[in-house]
Amino acid sequence: VALRSLYTFFLVFIFLKITGRRGVRQMSLFEVLIILTLGSAAGDVAFYDDVPLLPVLVVFITLALLYRGIMWLMGHSEKLEDLLEGKPIVVVEEGQLAWEKLHAENMTEFEFFMELRVNSVEQLGQVRLAILETNGQISVFYYPDEEVRAGLSILPTHCTARYTTIPQEGIYACVRCSIVMAMQAGEKRICSRCANAEWSKASRAKRLT
Image (cartoon, rainbow, N blue to C red; front, side, top):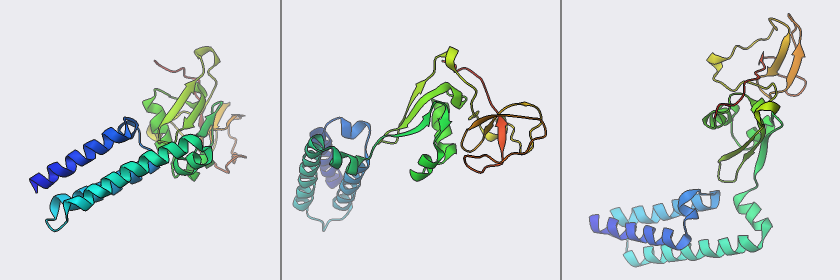
């Protein structure tokens, strides 16, 4: 088993050297599929004595050629690239969250806000543009401090009070879709954009760098 494991280790190493650094750094959906297929072949040959070594080598060579071929085709066909790797999606524009796009990508607001907090974002008014990349990462472009606007605080729920009845006059943000509105004390309002009834006080905090 140890010798067969070493065999598969070197096959995977050679495969990754052939496919280039991109396959190691940030994997797309297509690359994840390739790696899972490799893992299945490598696991079988490592643990089962009755699995011949040569066919597994053929599997690795075939996948390496497939990967190289698909990468070449994607370099010459934008439609194929979009089909296999998808397109970047704008999820925040001018401080407004496109929550319906997040849901279409099976990503919740909580997951997305966690990613923004990791990038030192406290409230959406700090964000000019946020793009969900094809590899699952989020690219964030910020407003300069003097242009930061009021926006939805994305701190954890226990750090931000939520209201269905507005306690005092001020600027409030819908906790679901982030739309910002001026509201009066005692007001109860259903968000016109997403039909949500909960609001939090909009934050004007500037980003800490």
